[in-house]
Length: 156
Image 1 (tube, rainbow, N blue to C red):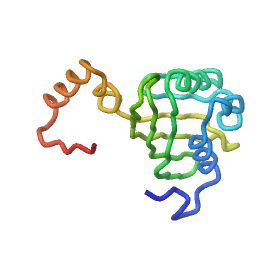
Image 2 (cartoon, rainbow, N blue to C red; image 1 turned 180 degrees about the vertical axis):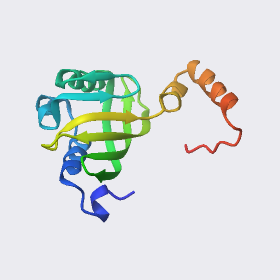
Image 3 (tube, rainbow, N blue to C red; image 1 turned 180 degrees about the horizontal axis):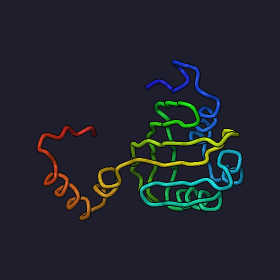
Image 4 (spheres, rainbow, N blue to C red; image 1 turned 135 degrees about the horizontal axis):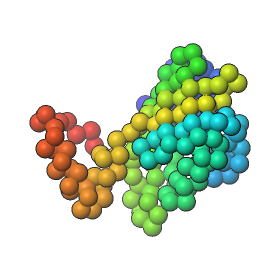
């Protein structure tokens, strides 16, 4: 898929967010206040934090527990003071050679100054993460099959 800026001009606030996530390194966390407001709220399947210190802890934890985490923004949609990002997140678990992939999206609301005031990630931890864990994965796949309508198309 082409980068989000290839087809259309991207909103400046959204472009700043895309550039931040695609280049994210541990060193960039010192300048998190350039992207997030002091009282920003961050929600994902495992975290619900408020304030820069909380957001910083989420990203620090990511870098402490994963090797080579990298976001690839696939597309964006911006309207008014909010945007949606569709992304792939690639990483390796510490000490393992295989690269994992999580496909998800983020809903962002901007403050008047263009920084992120509210950030919510949407992705399926059962399918994208739990099903890859030995033993637990077998149980999660069985449960998904039991609860499905019966004609699922695998995207992997």
